[in-house]
Image (cartoon, rainbow, N blue to C red):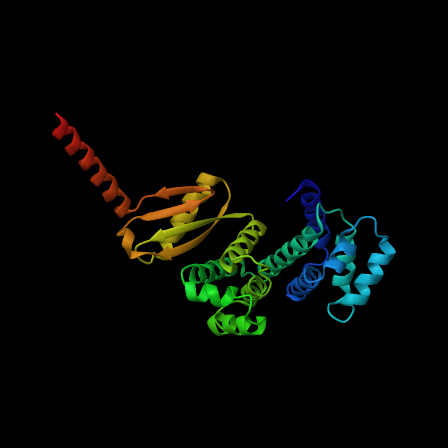
Length: 275
């Protein structure tokens, strides 16, 4: 993301604070606007062009979205479209990110931020590990209604409403992106709202709550900020755990130690043979 677009996003997030609430209306409205602009080259070009008179932009925004979103959303979108973007598609990207930001705010205000992060991670893992599911959700020839119906069948009553809104956006508006990657990006943006790092923890069996809290506390002390844990169970590591956080991989699994020991034995055997 180029400098002017980053500045626009920062300004828009600051402006959005007055619109954030405990329901999803503002967030879902922003997704509606982002999708509409994404689907129209002409609309995107006019609204992202700094040479277009503000009155003309505002009139167009009202004409297009008056019956589709709430009045406060229209007011906010006018502010966003007055900002400078590096390229027209960046307006869509920023509006979508603002929708995720608003979704995270709703989750925070309703005390379900940790649940949303955990549910996004679980769904992302399910999609990433199942080729048939990946294809079904990414198939460009399949109607969005069919894909969203599949999402509802998979997580409809199990997940928080915020999670469902974010997954629906990721699936329904992938724009050529892999769904698992989009959900992962959304999850990181949600975590950033809570000012926390996300640690992916792989263990051989389910951890007790006291172990989870001890691990969270240790990582928080090490990295100097709040930590959200996404825990995945993989019996193949035998024991111990693997932690992926902030671009680092901390491999304390038994399988890794056994592999290292095996390599050492092979090296020692080769050394003896040569002598």
